[in-house]
Length: 91
Image (tube, rainbow, N blue to C red):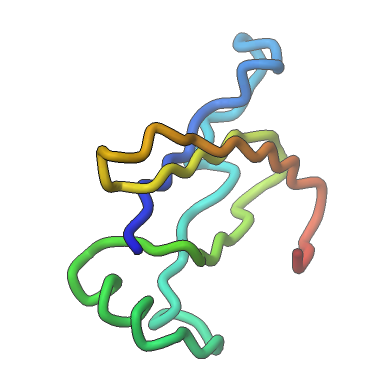
């Protein structure tokens, strides 16, 4: 199943001192990593799409918001996840 993932600024932070979200985190393809992806994720990545599993890499300390929703318009569900990168970590 295809998901739409977005990287957004953290609205809870002071916008004058905040770092742009793409400077805090970046999406990482499974094909660019040492992790093995399920076949359906590989198929989606080959088409430039994302599934229900993603990898993210911390770029620098800061705060960002990641949103995901099922790409099929039949579903109106949107999940929210807030990630604060404080140092290198594996989640």
